[in-house]
Amino acid sequence: MRTEGRAKRLPRAVRERQIMDAAVDVFSRLGFHSASMDEISEVAGISKPMLYAYLGSKEELFATCIRREATRMMEAIATGVEPDQEPDVQLWSGLRAFFGFVGENRASWMVLHRQASNQGGPFAVELMDMRARAVSLVAALLTQSTKAPATKLEAESLAAALVGAGESLADWWLDHPEEPAGVVAARLMNLVWMGFGDLVDGNVWHPPSRR
Amino acid sequence: MRTEGRAKRLPRAVRERQIMDAAVDVFSRLGFHSASMDEISEVAGISKPMLYAYLGSKEELFATCIRREATRMMEAIATGVEPDQEPDVQLWSGLRAFFGFVGENRASWMVLHRQASNQGGPFAVELMDMRARAVSLVAALLTQSTKAPATKLEAESLAAALVGAGESLADWWLDHPEEPAGVVAARLMNLVWMGFGDLVDGNVWHPPSRR
DNA sequence: CCTGGTACCTACTCGCGAGTAAGACTACTG
DNA sequence: CAGTAGTCTTACTCGCGAGTAGGTACCAGG
Image (tube, rainbow over all chains, first blue to last red; front, side, top):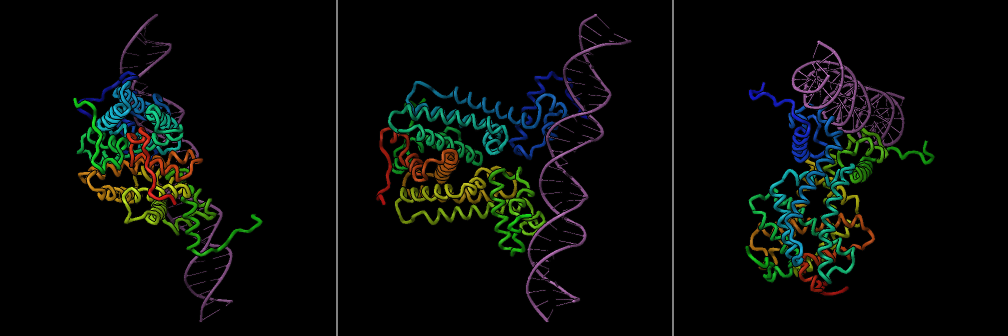
């Protein structure tokens, strides 16, 4: 039917990539429950039994998607962050990397945040794991900053709040894409580092060296 | 079968309350998709056709739950906040009211935040509406604070970040219930008003008058 | 040409859960 | 007691979607 002819008999590894891409796309648009294996197989340009033969059940497929996208994101952030710097610079580079990733991988972000967060299934584990890594990373950054958070519990709760602020702001950003990533990241940086109290007085935070 | 005998022939208004309570309970535990009308009717101690006769379809029922719980929460916050006060005091009272409500209505909060937020159905409207009200309320508070957020977009994005921080911290709190509401609220207050920069230096925010 | 293996498909089964048909029981009214 | 209005139930239909049975096409190596 297609004039191009259907690409046939591709090796397994290639098909698996195609299927994963299609799955992330569909899951991000419809969510786990509303997405059907039929639609995923259709988007992937493949039949359903192939899907099951290669990636297993629907839950396994979803978990695999989560793991892949979470890994990509954590790597992007780890690459972007600058260790051995002052805490505020570390936080700043981390925020830039995070918003940069979200801006260039909207579907990935939607799967990770909007879809996976509240499905009670076994995949929530993957998601919670990544989130926990992010939180403890921030918490380590906070405790490293000498005095401030006295107890471990306090550092962790503040980190949770900060991560939540980042997630929420990323969601807001999806509805206001006209803003560049750097501006959004800078706003959150000012909020959490300076606080409203300083912002009201006109005191803003800015990076030590403008490149 | 029951020794107590089944409570029979209750008036419609009473049944509707029972059903709503049961629905909030089940939705909060299982989420919209995984919750079945059979289970809701069972928890409510009633048969399924009654459920449909009184509250309509599953989506209508869910939307009604969202609306009821959202209204309860917004009223709790509106009652707790103190207008005509300095911005920081207003924010403080609002945070206290919010965490107080969440602490005493865990199921309500779960339905509102974890379940309703990402279902693409018609009920998302209800939820987004409440969230938008909360965000614009905070945004108004920010713009009212003289200089800080120059543009409307900036105020709104900061408000979104703050609301997200509150939601995330509330979720974290569900997993660490040993902390009292006031402590958690105070932490977020310090984070968003003082900022990490001040907290690192040991500068903390505290309410003007200790009651 | 056969044997085997891998890519790939059409066409099913089957359970679950939303929604309903049809009526039974109770209570109040005249 | 007949009529009727509201409460309440058992016992279905029916579509959707996860997962599968059983095969076909194509390409090795012998």
